[in-house]
Length: 77
Image (cartoon, rainbow, N blue to C red; front, side, top):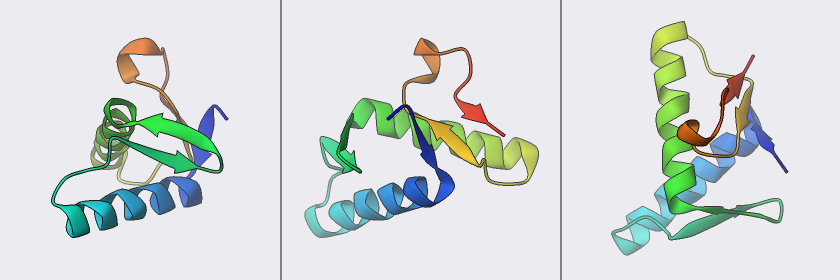
């Protein structure tokens, strides 16, 4: 899996936030449809998606899995 749909991304964020609410810290990784995503990567994905939302005024349709420093394009629309 190289990317998440908006629905998958939102579900991932919900799981991360629920874990944080219950445990007081974010999980070391999350799993989306069998794909393990490390904390450093999912935090970067969330920051990038939020930046896109602020700049473009809408949510991205697809979120690439990976750090923005590792890739040329994180969000495709």
